[in-house]
Length: 420
Image: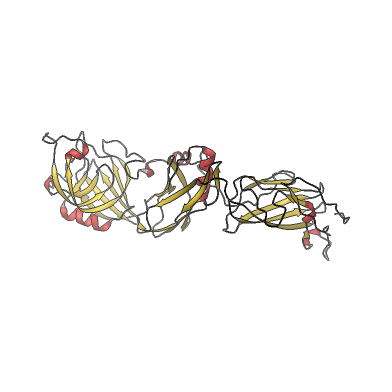
């Protein structure tokens, strides 16, 4: 590398050239340039940050770092704000230019660490810092995570409700990238856009038993569109209990209750009769009600008709918002284990219903097989999320669509050239 002084480069007001003394390559005792202490690469690096005290970068503009010397190349760039949020970016194949590929946060302090290499392979370093200004718009996208903090079953999806609709795929990617779900033990998972204002997150398989799940947002201050910026979100921490799965076989009129993959109990049941067949597929316990008054009129059956009913029901475990429960049905004990006579619910004796009620929690899995009913819908009537296979689930993500075997985007801006 040449030791000659380098002239200061005159640039436009949007580009700052860091010009200090020229770096000197000092070889180590073994003559290997890689063993040298990194030289100061200030005069080889330019970036489009603010060029004066008190000035702040426009968060609307991408960050760009370039090499000013044709003999040197950029090998690594890491850009991170004070909150620990990394900025994703791309480095050109020849190592002459790096630029951010996602928005900067507003009102943030950034540190950019740049690594370089001269023609002899000696390493250079430069650390840049700058602040970003206020967002240009006042519209904020706030996020509400669900469910509330607590202990749940292994089938509980995570939900994110947005206060404003997001329709554009690129804008959805910005939002989705900022919504973080971390679990211990770690599992692969992905978000699914249910509609313009709601996302669900689930792993490929059920959550592990006794896991800890932390949900938070890095969206605050991030630009989503010209008129929309990321707003606030309260983090949520959940835990899971035992792996509880109750499987009802409508053809054999029996429910098998599993805990941590061990069969615990078999319960004779009755499910929906013809015309009122119980939904097949995986459902998630939505809640438990010790007493419910069930009226046929609430599910579209006219009062006074041959199918109408008005019954007091005890130990009712809800699995759909439209009114499907697992509950005590003392009036049908003679049919339980032998015939399907209900209007869609899973009925059992009062003692069995009480036992079931006491041994399940919100988020546990209730699966129905061999019914003549339709498959549980994925969304809108509870949590039927698990009835979408992993490939279809990935297709609902703005980040991972079409890549079912990926582990999702990484929070990193450390990129190297694809070719030398």
